[in-house]
Length: 250
Image 1 (spheres, rainbow, N blue to C red):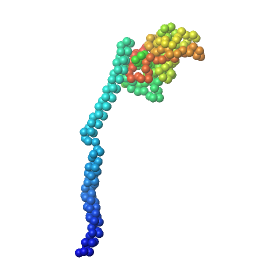
Image 2: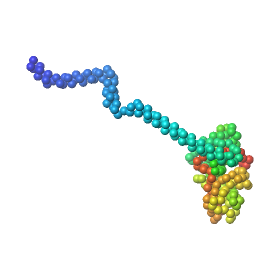
Image 3: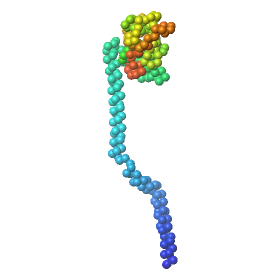
């Protein structure tokens, strides 16, 4: 008996630990890890967001989304109101949204969400808030493509409103264009207003184009002026398309 007690005092603790380990392993197998997961959940519970906190986060995200939508709609409505007010002072036309614009051809062309089904034709004039934007070059039933006045291939006959000096305006990158004069010493100076010319075969006369920014009378082969366009070509959302009986090159 004394020998058994001595053996138990030396090996008893080890046997108890082995028994507990075997019991834990058996329980883990029977619960398929459920006990461990439950223990992990209890230990991490203080660090997990409560249900009310999660709901608040979701509600705040929804509110921010709605606020962003309202801001965007207000901006679009303001642009559209400005365009309609501009149209009221001009001949009536078709209001069309800009639905396409390539980063590679940002200053050359845009695609409108209106087409032949809405009465748009090749050669029609496209204007925006402030003045001339371009002309229609391609039409499908539901879309149309606009050649912008900032495209280097665009040529428009224009005139200086103050002196009636005429010339040809060619596009260049940015919200600028270059006017080349026919006269050797044209009567032109910075700040002069530029409009489409009565002798143009491309556009109706009197459409606002922009203002003279600078003049180079020594330019060869003809004097030139840099025109700052009055329409914000780089920020078009909506435009007005009007019919045009002139569809030939300048």
